[in-house]
Length: 391
Ligand code: GLA
Image (tube, rainbow, N blue to C red; front, side, top):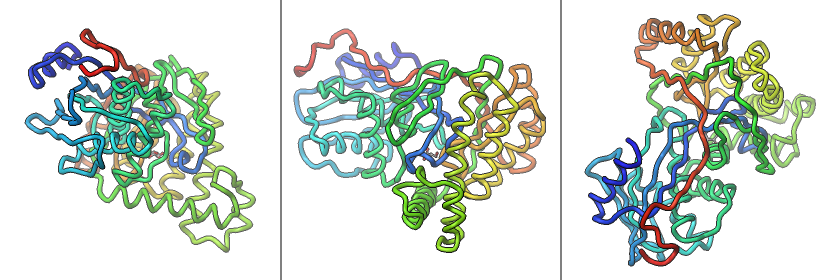
């Protein structure tokens, strides 16, 4: 849906025009999985899929939220007082953002909000980070909070950690806030410094959603994080970012089998991210294939977050593409999507192979997106915006 249609929908619902528009994208992670909460390196890219938030200030302390994606549903809550979870799952993301901003000292007022998103949900493309970053971007603009993009991202992460109960790292919110069209970002999750890495023009970026029903994802995710933190403690380092393979081997006997494997993934994955920068920039598919395949295998064997559906999709792509392309799982695992690079002329082959083999092997249908990278958070005043006073 385009912004004009959304503006009309806003006016229909709230009987007044929207004053502002915040837009934040979903993302695909090219490499660097689960390294973010170990303060290591990641290399995601923002996509053109995005979440749009239209808003207008109210003269009371109510936040009233509608979603174009959930017709007939709405949520409302008061600000300036404690914000607790409500019944709407998507509404809770908005509540979580407002609660986190307030807990950080941000002073909020009432707001009418209409949300619309084309980020595929449950695909591991960070639809929740897109929602958090667009909502906090809207709150920042509406109430003149003066946040930097990094601050918006860390508040989004806190909303996810403290309100939604998922101990995620900073990657998704940071790329959603700071992404650059035509580029991936190499992010150092300790300093939050990021460097743009140009996407290759000789390769297509293909994302394939397994549509595997994701279950118990948050508890498994949190358990992996716990394993990493215990491993770091036993290795005597602040985080696994500071560990190396020699130290890991020396300490092997003091770690449980799981802690050893998780740490092995993180240490090798950080090295793979750094090795991928040059390969991506130059579109060197051989070098990309080496690090992306290494990453997938490590996620399968050491971090144990792939499922037969994502393993099968990766195998299908790799076997049809041979040395011309490569695929790996992407995102939080336990289902979700895979990311594949291949020459544009091979996209059709991938589509046919997946359509023919995946349903037969896994009993599921996949969704395939040939993607372009997009920009990070964008916020603009619309006609009718009258500054930070009540509207
Ligand atoms: C999810 C989390 C991120 C990151 C990835 C795995 O997307 O939200 O913080 O840990 O999983 O790389």
